[in-house]
Length: 403
Image 1 (cartoon, rainbow, N blue to C red):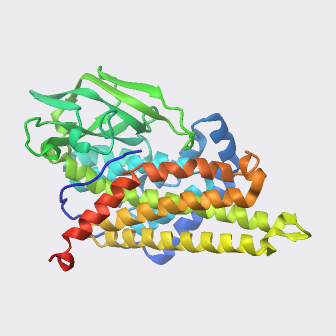
Image 2: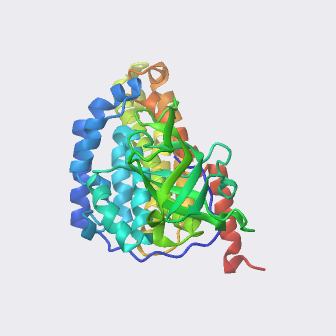
Image 3: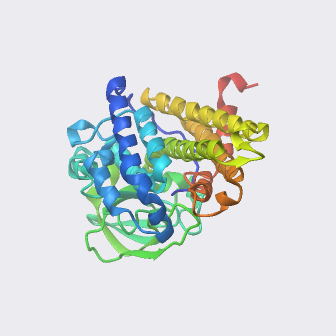
């Protein structure tokens, strides 16, 4: 989970080869079947006990989902971002927590694929794609939040190593992860603060100075380890500096977060769709005043609005994914998709609870879990207040709006 905004231009990435429709359908159907068969029956128990679903994660490894966008030459599936979004949507219908296992893992693979040296790609990507090692993103700090320019974690060059001191907060996969993309300050004297940041790939290899802190007890998004990370004189080999270049880490990570906003938007669509599906089943079974409540106009108005908002959000997410596939910058489109989809998810999950009445407020039905999970998408991967600023600033820069 990250809360950050982009304030500087980032280089475009190469276009992605579009996944053939037949292959896309086969992959999405495979994921849908996995969710119905394995995920849905186990979700409530893992959520209630806040237990990591290792058995489901192992099955996702076998399905190749840890290498969704990793190039085939490194053992990945090499899929496009439209298929990526569809996969995240399907998993979120069953248990949104599982997408968290893949989300920041994917950001690490993205940064290495597009910015890593040939040696870094060969060293890390095959193991990440297979799920042999799980990845994460060490970005957000206790005192920074959305203000990446205020990042305090320092990495000081010392011979062939960097010495890191600082801490990170709200780190997904912190306990279970093996490798992380770490953003740290290497030039404290830079007049533009975000230009003094560098990205590193770090591993839990027993090197002293790298400690996982407390497990955070969350409202929703349960069954996934979210923790603090602490670095005290932690030494990183200089060869782990991503791309071998200092002070360009901000752009590398922000480019990855564009795709992170696609996945968060897709998660929101999936959770909202699950809430609608549950409501559609309920309104045809629950009776009041001698007929199913789905026959009451008040309920019909609700489900019509819910379905329309979900489809609008889905199309925004797919549009952002398609533009990413073409190699375009998508801070505007991914920001719009994430903003609209996450706010929609909050609204739809609340409406689903209202449709269920008192039953929706109990743990006998899954809609209360959808309601608790929805705020994560509003807050994570850049708060929606930040998303609005990103969208407005991008619009103000467009030539057609220049006076």
